[in-house]
Every structure is written in C-alpha cells, then in structure tokens.
Image (cartoon, rainbow, N blue to C red; front, side, top):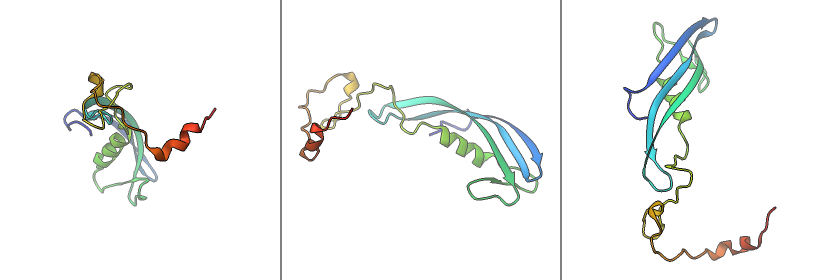
Length: 131
C-alpha cells in the first residue's frame, strides 16, 4: 500500500489536443507492505511515469473524464501507483519464511520442528525428470 499522501510527489504537464487533454509526467511515493513469506514489514519507493488522455466522453478503462473547468488527476495517480507496486513484496530474495507448523521466523534460524512429511498425492512427480 502506498504510505501516506503527504509524501507523494507528482510532476505533470498538460497538452491540449483535438481529442482532449494529454497529461504526462511522473509520480513517486513510498510504500509499505508485509513480506509474503515471513510477514515482516517491507518498505520501498515506487517511481512511475504516465501519459494518459482526458476526454469529454471517456472510454471505460482507456481514458479519463475531462471536467468542464478542471482535471482530476487523483484517479490517474492512484492507478499508476497501484500498477507499479510489487505484486509479491519480499523482505529479501532469500527469505526463508515462517515454519508452517509452529510459525517461527526461519530467517532467524531453524525452529526445531520435524520436517513436514511429503504429500503422497505428489509422489508421482518425484520420478519426473525434466531437462
């Protein structure tokens, strides 16, 4: 999730064209989320460029509505930021996650639980050798 509205930085230019107005620029903001493996807090910075059309009769999902006297950049900025966020944030690439039995953070070391037994329904895949 994007972390706070005060830290969002936007620089945009507007250009009038026959179809409407083109807004282009850059938006940057901090974000925070939970690591998908170990659930610790992860923070980062997202920086994305945009170029979108605002027109009087917008096409759903393709262009943005053009007001009579103003242009609302909020939906454009929100969408640009959301599309640039990581789909599966990780605290680090080598994150070990948590133990499925006791919930201990495996990045801090082994938890002492017995290794999980293999699901017999997947046993046929053990004989499969690709490559």
